[in-house]
Length: 465
Image (cartoon, rainbow, N blue to C red; front, side, top):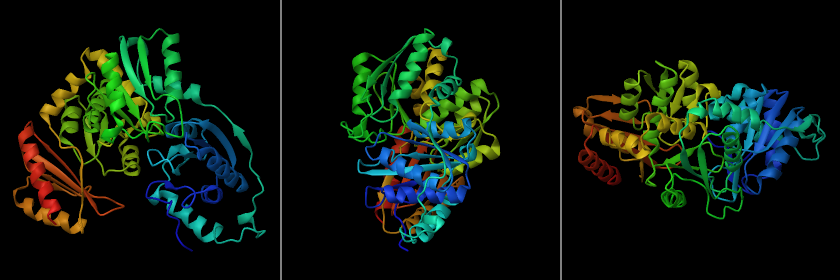
């Protein structure tokens, strides 16, 4: 049986309708019911035009396998994470393609306690069931695997109020100082959560004003696919911050599991520096806690966490690795420079709402601007940001680069690719899982010119292969 291209390392994503469609969605639901042996599963979907029909087919597949389905409607991925653990059900499935192009859709799966179902934790087994058992079976076969009668129940539920309660539990809203925030949902799924938080703030006289940009959910994406990691997707937020003289700007991707921050000057803040800020924010509440971070850029996070009395713990990049390590270490928070932020009290899952709430509280406590807080960290540990290069043989290129620098290196770490500590500067080189691309990150100890010089040096070496 030809393998389905929509099954990726961490989730399901494909172009509609050739790589993913309602029939495949039904079969994924049926296979998930078989694999999880579940009694009840939560489902939800983002604002893509194909999400309602895919979610309906997925739900029917689950119900055909005897699973009871709880549908929380239009939502973000983290609302599925919350509902799965909060309702104490056996799993959750979010229909979303996050920041992929308009004609794509997909699914993110979790099991009980919102534990990830990814390539190494069940997704490959579900794929095999779909491909070998359910897809191979004739549609007119009367066997149980193709019986489409609905054995499980279906019910629409809302967990929004409980979810907002949980979000606001990370801060003390009554201590927030007057602030103006630009919020850009990118016509994705974040808008209804912002509205709910705004209503709570107004009812308790919390002095936060929201300036809403591209707020209405719209699967046509009239202002482009929401992905603020791309520079071309940042202008509207930056312009609104300047126009309204806001204290901070916040923008989300389509399913809002990532948020991106802009300072009061409209400048985009690299996710790396937010990890250190959030680590510090958590350590104010939980002294001595462990903070998980990825290996791409590390010095600022390590310095900020240790200065705040915490313990930094290095972990391989990727949500499945971070979540697993957080559970093992009982870490209060984990962050990646890609703007994924994970929280122990949120079932170790990533959230795009908790970060901006914590930073808002931190700004109130310190009485300083975001640009001032971040500028100190950038000056102390300037970084290149991630630079991608397409090469013919990524593994060989990385080993060649290592040979060039290893004799003078103070330390070499292979947690994820190679991390090479050269004393006053360091770099990380890692391969993409899906394409012949090498990803480079460089940082230095307070020397912008050195960081830029070594970045240019490494990029030249990499691209000469």
